[in-house]
Image (cartoon, rainbow, N blue to C red):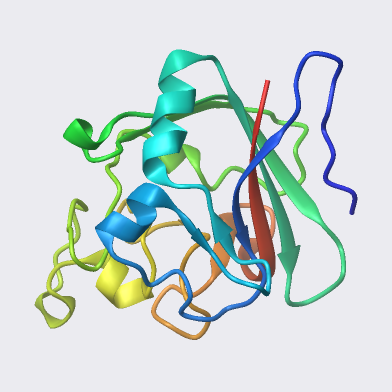
Length: 183
């Protein structure tokens, strides 16, 4: 799939790409803050820049997903996407799921949740075996809500795994995911 959503006035910005189910996204708060990447194509823009961009302008979010089960691409689009600053623990505000998207809405439930990493627990999950921390259980930082329907930074084969939930398809195990800021 060619993931180009460019218009005359807006060039999309890749904010996340995960090309495998590895533990590459099992990173600290400080690493998620500034961003990271590797030579295989795994990538996180950085929460600080994401916050600066989305709190100073109006952005949409597009999520592209390729499941393990086939070579089809699925997508979900949201008309509003904001990540607040570190003083609010990079709290997420997401809304406006586009019903014509073919992946289903797994992300809206995460709205209002703060970012969690293995070394900074901001989720509302209780399981003492994993320090009550979804990032410890899943092996990657994210905006967890009860350990999530949308696990785009999790490791495959770990807890919830690397997946996306859809009422139409159930849990979709992923091989590739991309998150884009669009206008």
